[in-house]
Amino acid sequence: MSEITLSGLEKRYGDELAVEDVSVTIDDGELLCLLGPSGSGKSTTLRMLAGLETPTDGDIRIGDEDVTDRPAYERTTATVFQDWALFPNKTVLENVAFGLKMQGVGKEDRHDRAREMLERVRMAEYADDDPMNLSGGQKQRVALARSLAVNPDVLLLDEPLSNLDKRLSEDMQIELREIHAELEETFVHVTHDQDEAFTLADRIGIMADGTLVQVGEPNEVYQNPKNRFIEGFLGDTNFVEGTVERTTPDAVRVETELGRTVGLPTAAADATALEAGDAVTLSLRPEVLSVEPVSAASDDAESSGAVRADGSTTNAVVGTIENVLYRGSTVRYSVVVNGTTVFVERTVGDGSAFDAGDEIRIDWDGADLLAFRDDGSRVDL
Ligand code: ADP
Image 1 (cartoon, rainbow, N blue to C red):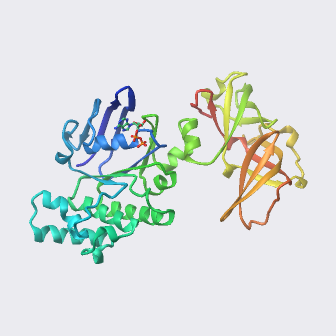
Image 2 (image 1 turned 60 degrees about the horizontal axis):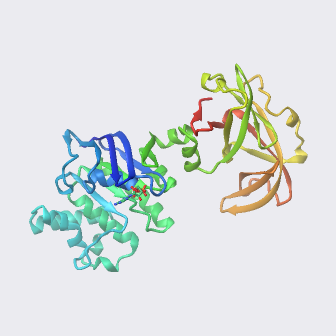
Image 3 (image 1 turned 60 degrees about the vertical axis):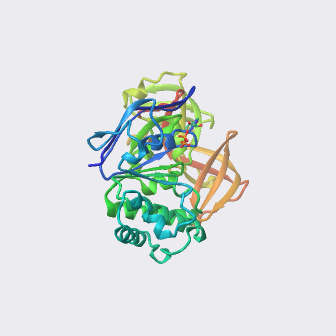
């Protein structure tokens, strides 16, 4: 059993509160990614799990045991670091066998086990090499094999892929996922890279300013971000500032900086409790925006914000393309609408192509937008 429970975990460095009141249960066999910007407390949390830092408050249980005060070498965890930390004067095989040697495992047994681990990470043919002659990706595989060799209950990974180039990192993400599926052990993986977290994680724990802000399955945190910070951090979006104009029992109407009133269909008490004059920020994700040439005629642009019989709302604005950016399979248009820049994306080769200077109409359904209050909290629509 290697379920991990963190309760009220805190770490202070002098006046600096690096980690504050982190509580979460990580299931046995789960792969949890701690995701957050630099300085948000991810590494410190992981290092406390590893026993490399002592918490100032709170406790850590692994399985049935309280390990809060136990040193690293008495824990059933193993850590893979960003910088590999391989020994230069030992062969690849000796590096992988090192932890077992420390545990007093005999030479033949530990070398057998090390070879098995090297096969698992597809590095068996390098067993007798000097690790310093390996590429970054190969070194990381060896480091992984070394951590797995001691058969830990919990594998802790501290930004292990951040020194690799994008392509290699993506390959390693898939391999890590496979290794995790094979081993069925608990992994806690720290990263600042959203794509990496989405590829790897069973659940993502999002950290900001030392706190664990939200924990959920990747899809859940993306669809239901708890606050504006998470919405901005997890993907590209357009934040549009606005002020509540009025609320009705089935909708909130928001006057926006786009020069249009936007209708948000809702019957939720949280939303209808908003009052005229309240500041709100709307998130217009590029995937909910459709674009068409202005010549295609805007039948209802003037009634923008009205709620239709089916509960959707018509929302349309007209803007001028300022900038066209090709990004491989997609093209991103920056569009100036009433002095505010909004970006929209299209798939390259979908039949429409616009140039800088073109006028286009941007459309969306108000039901697809998210709204946030002044304090960043999400409005339940
Ligand atoms: P992350 O892993 O998310 O980048 P860290 O856990 O490394 O964040 O750091 C969280 C905060 O704690 C940062 O503000 C960092 O400067 C501070 N911090 C981390 N380690 C130490 C330390 N040994 N001494 C003082 N401050 C530290």
